[in-house]
Amino acid sequence: MREGFDLDPVEYPTATADPEWLADNPEARAEEVMNAFRDPDISAVIANIGGHDQIAILPYLDGDVLREHPTRFYGYSDNTNLALFLWNHGIVSYYGGSTLLEYAMDGEMFDYTEEYLRRALFEDSLGEWTEAAVFTDEAGDWDDPESVETTREIEQSDGRIWRGGEEPVSGRIWGGCYAVLVEQFLADRYLPNPDALNGTVLALETSELIPDPAVVGANLRALGERGLLERFDGVLVGRAAARSHAEENPREWRVEYRERQRDAIADVLDTYNPTAPVVFDCEFGHTYPTCPIPIGGEVEIEPATESIRLP
Image 1: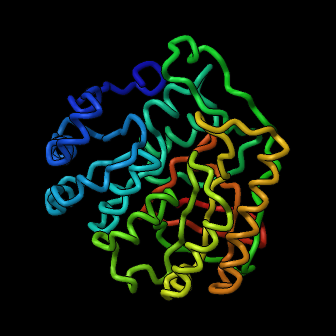
Image 2: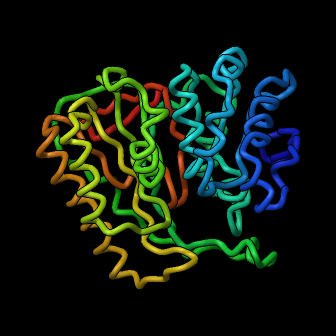
C-alpha cells in the first residue's frame, strides 16, 4: 500500500482483534466502521478479508452518519452486507480491493488488479473494463508466512462468455456474493424496495463455497417467482471459484463445474428475464485478478461489441 499506491495505512483495532471477541461484539464493530467513515483523514476504508457474520453489525449502523461521510469502501465476499447497506443510503462502494487478497496476493499483485484498483482509488471512473488474459482460483495459505513468496497456479482465460439479450443496457450495479445475497433475502430486513431495483444490473459471484449449480439455479428461480429477476436490465457473473482451502479439485472438474454453473444461471434467467444480457466469467469475486466493481455505480453493457464500461 505504501510503496505501490503511496497510501498511509491506519490500522483500526478490529483489524487484529480476536475472532471470538469480534463475533460477540457486533455493536463495537459497527461503531468502528462509522468511526472510520467519520474521520476526515481517512479517504478509503479497506476490509482485510471477508468473513461470515457481517450481517450482525447492520442493526447498529447509523445510515445518516454514513451518508454524511460517504467514504469509499473496498471489500468483497461477506462485505456484501455493508456494500448493500451503503447502496440503500446512496453510497457507492467497491467489490474488491481487500488487504489480504489483492494487496497481499501471493508472489506479487497482478498488474491487472493494480491498474483497476488504482483507478478505483484515485479516479472518478474505472473506464473500459477489459478482460484479463489469465486467472487463478487457487487458495492462498495465510497460516504459512512463506506462502506470500509463492505464486499461485495461473491458468489462461478463455475470456468472458455472453448469453441472453443482445441489446445494450446500462444501470446501477446491485449485488455481490451469492451466499450473502441468499442470507439477505432470507433475513429480509435490509433489502431495498423492489421498485428500487428496476433498471439496475445484478452482480453475482459464488465465492469459495463452491455451491451446487442446481442449488444456485433453484435459489435464483425463487427470486424469479418473487418477480425480482425481471427487474434487472443486465447480469454480471464473476468467474466461479472451483477449489478452496477445504476442497481441491482437478482442472477438468473445475472446467466442468463452471460450465454447469453457467448453464444453471443462464437457464433461469432465460425463463424469467430473457432480454437481459448476461456476462459470465467477469473479473470480480473469488478468482484473481480482479476489478473492484462499483456497487451502486453505473455500468454499460454492449453485447454487440462484447464490451463493458464502468463510467
